[in-house]
Amino acid sequence: MTFIASRVPYLALAAALASMTASAAVGTPVEPPAIAGVPIDFILFALTLVGVAIFHHHTLKIAVGGLIVITLFKILFSPFAEGPGVTGFIAHAAHEWVLLANLLGLLLGFALLSKHFEASKVPAWLPTLLPDDWKGAFLLLIMIFVLSSFLDNIAAALIGGTIAGVVFRGKVHMGYLAAIVAASNAGGSGSVVGDTTTTMMWIAGVSPLSVLEAYVAAGLAMVIFGIPASLQQQRYSPITREPPAGVQIDWARVFIVASILVIAIVANVIVNVRFNEFADRFPFIGAAVWVALLLCVPLRRPHWEELPGALKGSVFLLSLVLAASMMPVHKLPDASWRVAMGLGFVSAVFDNIPLTALALKQGGYDWGFVAFAVGFGGSMIWFGSSAGVALSNQYPEAKSAISWLRLGWHVTVAYIISYFVMVAVVGWHPDVSPRA
Image (cartoon, helix red, strand yellow):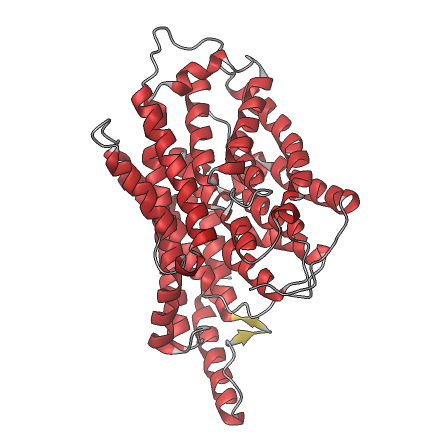
């Protein structure tokens, strides 16, 4: 096995050269070099994801290293969608920088927002509203679900993680962490302002009512994964019965949190609905969050010391997103409910934004099914969604794909059962026209 692994780079190089030579000889367009029909780009990306899953103590190094290898390979041997070589890479980076900058701004900004929320003492006061058994943990997941329906799922997951850390005295079960991410992603899947992918559908002309049907599956999934996760958490560390004595809510920090969230939502709606032609030219949403943060500095000082740790998690996610964007996914199989279901499993390891863009361009999907699949599917692995990566900055123990899959098994079960129920209850009603 070691011998074969040591020869993979040479085999890849030989295959790439052979493919390029053959293409040049017959004068056909250069296609990505492949081994046994599988583009080497995908093989390199898959190896990066396997490394992240197995060596979870070195995820940042593996993600950045994988990005460097993939980038060099693309420049030398495999053309970008925008063109070959360095010029193709520059054009590709110019196309992706707004998405990456928005993600960076949101991840770092919401990391500071979650600390404002924690310091406001609201999480310490919340036990007075939550039942003192497993139903309290389940109600918290429902709160995250509802928050995410009109709020960015990153913020919903971080707020939920902050509350959980307080009410469970810092001992949060891995299965419950997976459930927090799943609740935030499920809550946004049926709302055109709850997730980037559903907003993309709205912009492309998909009716909000078409996306709304995703809640049929998302609501059922909430029950299927929420109850087992809550029971796991109750056995691991029960919810506190009473808040600490003398809790005084810092209303200035509550105002800061509310202001940042409102500004983020308003910026998202205004830019994507009224000024869509400028949405891909500047990271308005990420910038809006930071403008709100800085304007509120005179009221309360942010916890700037949180930024180095949040930056590491952000660089990890951005490395995977950029690497995923360079994959030569020219087209998807013909649209069907089976293919849409497969998109959910792919989104657990592949950025769901380019997947959604490809589906919109191809057309022929029932968009409620796609919204649930790409929105909720990323919950099955911790790095499958930006909400999972953000939460792993709060809880580093979550950076184990094996433990996530083993202890958060109910998320995968919920996805499969809920999807089939949606097929049976709602029915597959494809939109035959391609989208912009």
